[in-house]
Image (cartoon, rainbow, N blue to C red; front, side, top):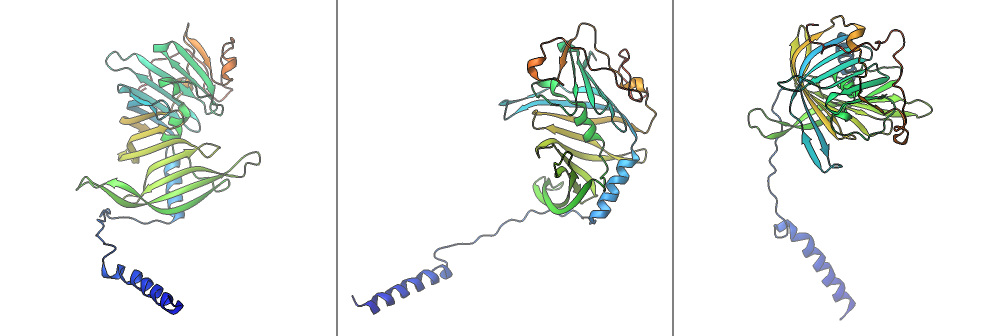
Length: 333
């Protein structure tokens, strides 16, 4: 076959391939249902968001709360999720670092757990298992399960938003979106939001590290979610905030969901009573090892825990002292 005929045939084939799609024979189109939120949205700059967050953080000095606690344990690592019965809880927080949290079983009101932290060390008493756990917030050997996995620092970080430090942190604003449930249709819709990434200056030549991601709801410009990262860039705490109410002039979420993906446990806190900025005494943050309770040291490697070792010494002056255990601190105490 002559070469000119072959070239001509190839050109005709190419022309046909290009023109056939235009006739609608080789493709079809369809409409995509766009489900976007119809809520009225507010706008803010990065500086306005940072100023607002720091103002809200500065408002709260102490927290005295009665909450319903809904804990669950498990996930992909364990292959199952165990949900515990809701328990009544009491939470005391005093800046800069003090926290105490007590959980009571329903009906009988016996203690499920009692834990305190001074920001550096923590102590957790678990009467049902006759265990007393001690450790440091900056040293973790994750071998515990169930309620033994609870850590006061995770509760503290979720309850009190830390202000953004301009000297050691950089904030970067992202205009993003999230899927929310439309109140009318009850369907998932896409709604714009803001994400404030907080990058902090690391120690010991670590450079700059991603510290937090703060999600801002654009309907009211309130905090809706906060992700706290560890030093390796992993998610340490993922907290979500809903249903803000006015507590004596302070807007605060009445529902907080705290997830710890590395330890695979989660806690939902539903606020029953809440008071801010009351005077809280040192002895309200005291927790002594119960007589006969097994001491579990989490500030040493697992291989060394079999050896007898005293509990960490009492906090230094200015911190809570180790005193005999008291009755659960109520919001009125």
